[in-house]
Length: 395
Image 1 (cartoon, rainbow, N blue to C red):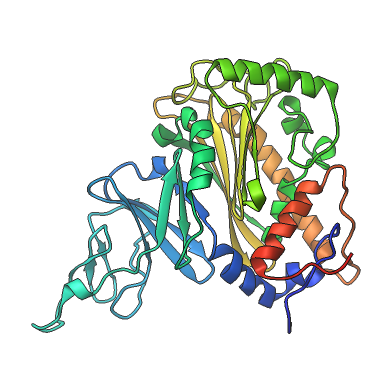
Image 2 (cartoon, one colour):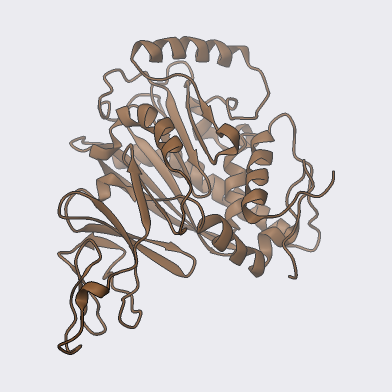
């Protein structure tokens, strides 16, 4: 590939944008390395020394809770000769000890000791290279860029809406991991429209309307009435009702949507499976939807929340982690808890794999996006093209 592909407005991306190794490398460098990435949950880092690792292409980041409660993030690269130092994908340590030559690093990344380096060796001159890290409303984000984008507008949108759900004091009840044979953009595009929902997601459709996605211009009087009534109810509870929809092209959305009549949660029968989380006292809070490009979407009900994190592996492979969170002391039926979003996600992965197989074939050509139900796909592709540094082709 000699140059990055460009897209005609209103159309899907050229084939190379999904399949070319050079484009994938550019995605990692210009999209994933330059933006805030969802890394995990405050609940996973609830004590000094608790850590998790995040892979971003060839890079691996350690996120760890420090002795004083501060959160630290480091490149997982020993300052001696470059070995990885984190012993596992996640765990708890008192210090990070390089397995190669036993250099020892404190939780804040400073070098504590380095054996056999001579009397004049200054440990204070060496450390694990730092990575920008932030946490808000129980979610943890990292950014590999030397000058990360401003995090504050996203935090200001997320905290008052997701904060009452208490994810910071929750626990992960179920964790599911998938390897999907599709480009990461195929998964995001799928998430950004509900064109496919009625025909593909019976479990999801029990509790959710198939409208309400940003950019879906369909009208549904029953939905509009439900939304108006729900917003009045949420306001009475002190929950912000207005949506935040990719303001000024920003890569995030936070929107609370109503569930169908008779449903208080995204469960198979609509009944909550656990007590309300956080400071919520009323189970009738709808479903809060969060997206943070390029790698997070989440739904938060009163009784549980589910997060989806994408990790690109190569041009045709994406790893996905789903985490289901409940109040720390909640006793819950784990199969019932995961039923709706396990089924919906696995249906989506099958759709995405079939979609990607067609994209990768000789017969693929960019196709037209629906102005009725796929405007949010268009918005994502515009954001992606800007982040990649390509200029849209003339329509």
